[in-house]
Image (cartoon, rainbow, N blue to C red):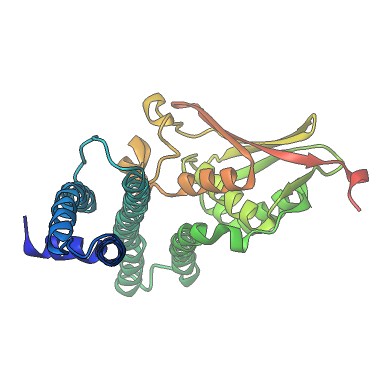
Length: 345
């Protein structure tokens, strides 16, 4: 038991002490003046002091116990369940709630920092691959300049440039997710028109990988409620994965796009005929930093693309479903809230 604790206790009980002794002084003076002049003040004061010391001793042990438990709670130590006064119980309950909230926020911040560090590390490692390829292309062109046509070297450099640009965009998308609500504007857009625009912008990626799109959709466009920019990020990532994991040879392979209306919903299916995803990996593809067997073996994946897609879908209220069979391909279905044309003003 420390002197500091005693001083803190006496300071907290100062008002009570002043009122207690002042009341007894007034009573004693009254008794001495009106009742009997022979009554001495020392006797009643000794009784008052005795009662005061007993009462204050009781309150001090209650105070010391509560203070000790609160300090244990502040040090992240579980406190004992024992009877407290109603006032003390309110303070302890409030402290527990604040402490629990603090621990949850601290855990969340640490988890985000760990995930960010892990992502940046993997991203830097992945960036080394296209940079190394560019260096090899340049060296090969210098050593074999007469035998290599400049357009061929430029085509290879353009492919690696697009890969680096895609990785940079992926980093920006990952960090922008934290400020999603500030950068989201739901609107009604045409699904097929948006899809064709995305495919057209990715035509070089289709050509380089010997993959071609096959589109099947209704003649009248499907109007969906979404954020145009974030939906573009979502579709570009899924289409990029379909192209990358198609592993088409010179004969080429298709990526099938099919859209249809299902009640008040609109569904878009993106299906490739690539290597597929192992059944064990399929359950974890939306987890952050999970690369799976395919990503580890040949594609230098960061494990963040489908995680970003899942987060975008969740925040926009879309449904994202993925099915796959090894050696036959993968299909991703996105379900949107659909708006009929006549309901749009």
